[in-house]
Image 1 (cartoon, rainbow, N blue to C red):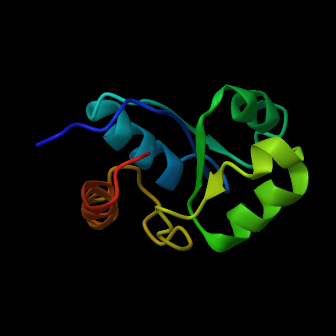
Image 2: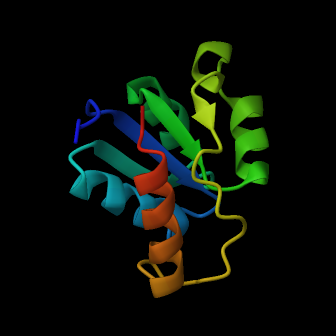
Length: 111
């Protein structure tokens, strides 16, 4: 099986405590550079967006907000590839969240 090239990924959810952290851990286990952050970390998001090759929003509201606040060239990097919807899990590494994201990443690895 051909391995995809490693990608610098910024994973963004609302608070940066559950969904983005879980996705970032999964991506790091697969060899990618990945950071999880929340929109609440207002000063970090634009800085990290400049570092990232891909920005994964965890739901459509986060995606819309990122596209509003980031410069145009960074906003084009925003993707809903791993959209799991709102945080219904409240715990990083929740088994259901982990299963959903693992299935998504296996079906559509970062590119």
